[in-house]
Length: 143
Image (cartoon, rainbow, N blue to C red; front, top):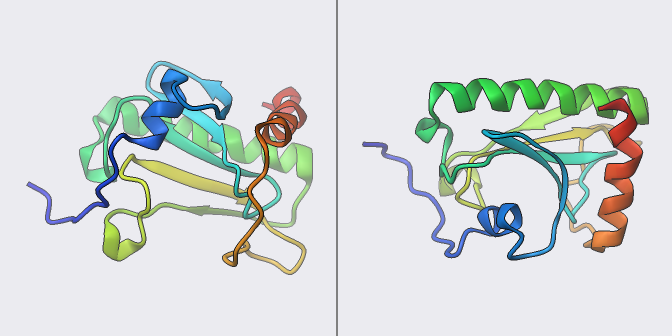
């Protein structure tokens, strides 16, 4: 039993994205993990690596899911590096409300650094699906 307190969000947005119930850009999908292009771009480029099964936190992953996520995290990082040629890549992951987890579905963020370094933690504009699809198409040749 975990001591983590996760946000209460039903239905799960990530599950809805994966099932097609809500539109979202999916860069790549495998049986255990997927890569999404979020509408709030906090880096150049910003991607989410998630499990395809609903698992609220890192503590809820099966071993095979953990390996699949790390494999896709590395592939996403390489695609950002080859495509955007940023001087840095940020990777972060939050578990529980106290760690600022907003969506209770396990995910890693991976983003190329912005011009001033790091990632943008301020309010950022929400892109359209057309714009996130363009980001996916730009990254896909290097994926």
